[in-house]
Amino acid sequence: MDEINRVSEEIPVSYINQDPDFPWNWLKVSVNPTLTINFVKQNLSKPWDWSYSNGITGNLNITIEDIEENPYLPWDLIGLFEENYTELQSFEYRDFIKSVCFFEREDINDLVIKFSNIYWDAEILSFNKCLNMEVLKKYRDENWDWDLLSRRFSLEEILENTELYWNWKIICLERMKK
Image (tube, rainbow, N blue to C red; front, side, top):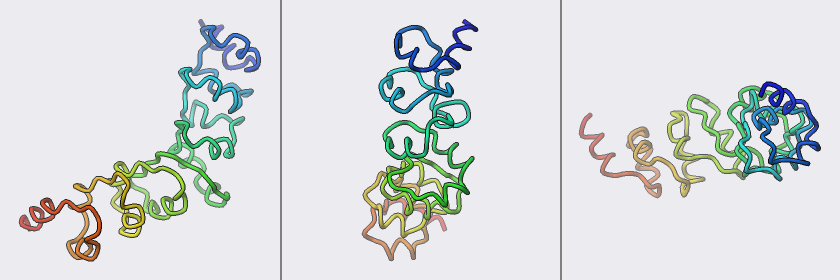
């Protein structure tokens, strides 16, 4: 099995492609330096490692353009952002980044707006305390956690934005507690 692990990581994927049903170690193939996005797409049912640190997202042969052109794939964008955020800020984006949650990032609003053409998991983003009204108004039909958001924003902010999907029962109960 150690030999299969070593070979899976080193053998050109053109050889793996000749016998994809062989019991390759797909976690090791994920970091194979000859891996291409086309090979990945041809073998989507395989048990890939999509992580940035040990998998496809961080594979040096997979480019930002590959990620950008295939936003439906389960990229590890948190890892990618954390490791490359400064350089990614200067990159020209088109259709980049899916399903990212940044609980503590103060710049979450800028990220959501800058990458507005992609899917963000709004329910997860609802936990970010820095999320602002501009983003909620602009993307109000996303799957936000309105119960959580109804507790977080001030009554003044809520009343200025009554078109949003607030949970009025929670708003009233929270205000009664105060």
